[in-house]
Each structure stands twice: as C-alpha cells, then as structure tokens.
Length: 66
Image (cartoon, rainbow, N blue to C red):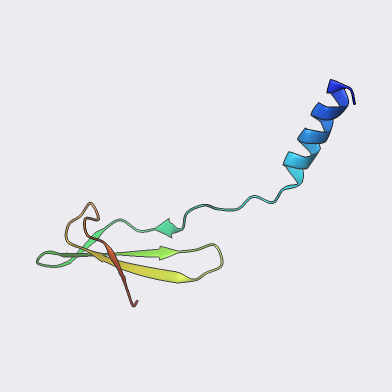
C-alpha cells in the first residue's frame, strides 16, 4: 500500500470517529455555608452530578445527591 493511500485511509478513519466529550460541563465551586462549597456538573446526556468540597478550589471533593 502506498503512503498516499495509507494517509488518505487514516484521515478518513479519523474523521469518521464520533467526537466524545471527555468532561462534564461544571459550574464554579459555590460557597454554601461556613467551610462547605458545592459544584454542579451536567453531562452531554443531561445527567447531573453534584459535589461538595471544603474550599473554593475543590479540596476533599465528594459526590453528593443533587
């Protein structure tokens, strides 16, 4: 197989692969109460995840119910 055909095949294969988001769309860490911050994330399929942390940078984050 010539390199030109191989490059064309690789380009076509790469372009036919659907693009998948690797990360959810998340809000910033919001202050909830003294020492508690929360964040909401929504995936492309609409599913929602909520997280709680001990500071505004997401330290000690854990998933909680929304």
